[in-house]
Image (cartoon, rainbow, N blue to C red; front, side, top):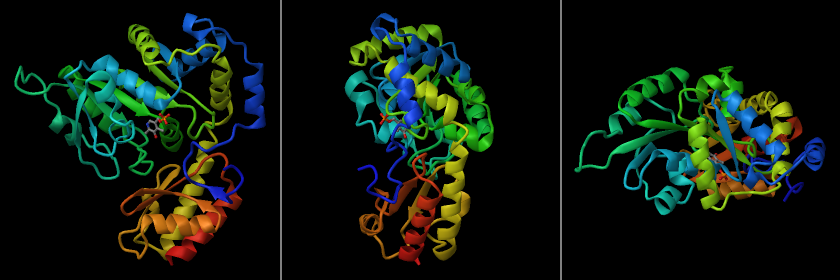
Length: 347
Ligand SMILES: *Cc1c(COP(=O)(O)O)cnc(C)c1O
């Protein structure tokens, strides 16, 4: 619940809309978006498409829906999508690609979600005729959530793209936190975006909007995606009220992601000093810190509970991992408090 914690590091989805964002939402001109008549949604879709170097965009209620539409566009029922074994599309979308679209999947192993060319290129299967499942799509996640906010190097993406394009395999970017990759590296959003057939981005993570994602691609692909969005139950009406939050976030909350990265880095440096096996500061690239408890006496749940009792909310992310995520509702005071609590507990 908002306000209960000194620092709520559970996720970058827990932010409260700012007063200015609420005003922008209240004042947004709206229309029926199923008829394409909401000017605020039209503006948001065009703006995000432009930022990412694509022709057209489609506003969706969730990042999962944007990813599911992206996969649906490229993969026929019975074909496969491939992604790394920690990918959100495989781990956290509850099998939707299989359930809704008849898509099968395989994955490659990765360290912290980092893309290496051999991962997708060694796994993809093309031209196997009627004998093996054909790979239709590679999904790349940037930054990588369960990998711990890992940024994917542009050269590696380009290498994968040049080989897979030759083989006729499409690429989709799960860019829920692409904003963080852009701010951390200075690589223009469009330089990432242009390497993919479709890209999804979230407005409700670090950007601090209450709801919403955008899928971008060619005009033709977005026309098809619009049909499937309606079929999936995602046709929305006067939804400019939400798109306005996204536009406001693009104006005011992108560059400030650097503050989140700096605070996460400061936390990791301090905690890494007292507990080097738990976090290495070099591993923190953006706003996510993963604590590795393998060499401690803590289980993730015990550590999460102990920190919560002292006002710091975090997330048990696996059998030996705790995740902390910085966002616009965690300031220096919250960061200092979290640093003190975790240094204490892990010392
Ligand atoms: C949050 C997230 C999504 C989308 O999640 P929704 O809760 O469906 O909006 C997609 N990919 C990644 C990597 C995410 O972190």
